[in-house]
Length: 176
Image (cartoon, rainbow, N blue to C red):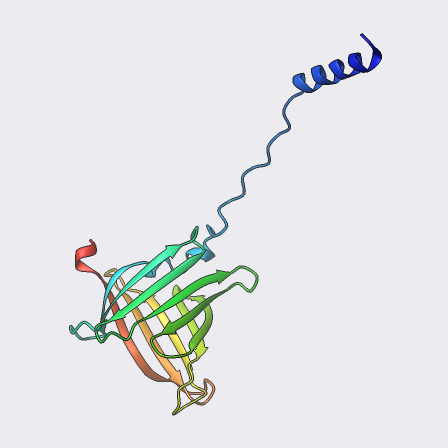
């Protein structure tokens, strides 16, 4: 056997008997943090009512999708003018973002986060009558399992606020 063949056999033997390199630990799921779960209380199938009333105005399906990295709402009002929101937690800014696209042109972007156990999101929702309208939405999980979405509007850059909407999301009866 010549020298090259002997060296190759020795290398093959050493490689075959060498211990395997340790595998690095698997990374955690990308969106499994407590911060990413900040909107989980809203996930579900809902019937939506004006606060204090029993006349249903909409149904809404909220799902946590894409490895838990997105919370998607499908808003289905009884009048047919629906919309969708895409919500996500941004690890760089430490804030939640929501982009709302409805049945009319344009989109609205909100930003915020969990404050005192409530999700609070604020964004500019322009309309022809008040092009610089701030809207602040506060989502609260109620003791009975429902979720309140309380919306306030400000046309003076947040100096004063007026109630814009007040909804109660009740678990959908046939989804239980």
